[in-house]
Length: 177
Length: 225
Image 1 (tube, each protein chain N blue to C red):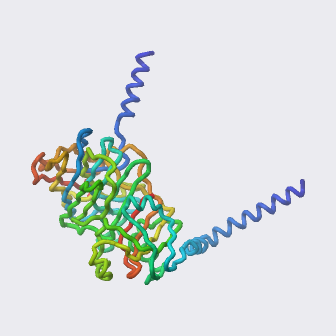
Image 2: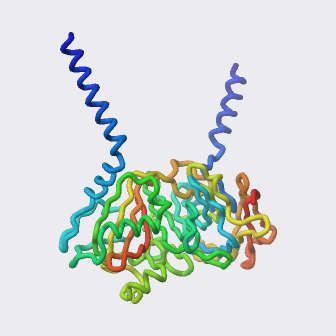
Image 3: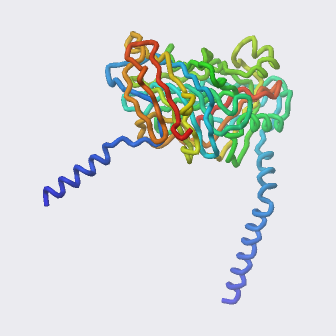
């Protein structure tokens, strides 16, 4: 009985220590987690955490990059947060991917985006554009709905921001989950 | 006893049948029902000053095509989640499609419509896709997997605390929808029939809205401002 009591005290002590550590170092753990989830960026290698089927509905296709990005992933994350702070708020996880992105259905680029990328300006849309997709996950927000709508509000938990990997300029954002 | 039960059933059925709306709207809509196929919708929007929007809320204005049930829809317009004091103060063009069962897609631009100038919002069905335009530039294109029989032109508030946001327009400077039209079953209908709705704090003036008149306008504003 005494042995069981001692074991219970030891388990409780370690549990409390872990909880205290996460409270004290929670921010640094979060920072490390964000970096640990940055995918390796190498020419010729593509991995995606995105849903390819949902991207297809959005008219977005991804191809394997043929060269390194001109900006680093942290620059892409900063650009995404600065461009869409209201959509990044509440995120508990950030993932970054580098692809050649095609989306012929989007034309609303900023002047800065077009001035800094002559090829984008000439085409007017993204076609195998070297781009980062910065995904902010874990937040929660509901979007617009019609009057008379009586289904569950459309909830979103991820926002994906497209950053021009040559210029570091944010191009657009989308969400499909 | 039977009369009592019948009375209870009537009251309960009234409660169930009353349409529930989750977010406040200010504007108008109509649903033509089966046998109709709306393949284009357009409106011009003029917002003199974009609305006040505080944390946990969003304000928007858009036109929308809906299916016969009103539960699948596609829309395009402007959206403001939180004012950020950037180039256009956080206002963005946006477009959204909802196919039901949680299959909802949204696109946002980094840029948005300048205040106090007219901006056009259009959805057209083309080659089996809902193509969404803001100021004649495409923002999104999604499979047209439902038939649109209804149309809506609204300002909307949403978020966890929607009334932290203002409907666009104020008493001294109204927002205005104009050039409203739909293309249904092969014909263009200017200023089609609308049932107007203004939820709490939403105000509108439809005095200059005449069915069939392409010059019709609807003024909208938030009565708190």
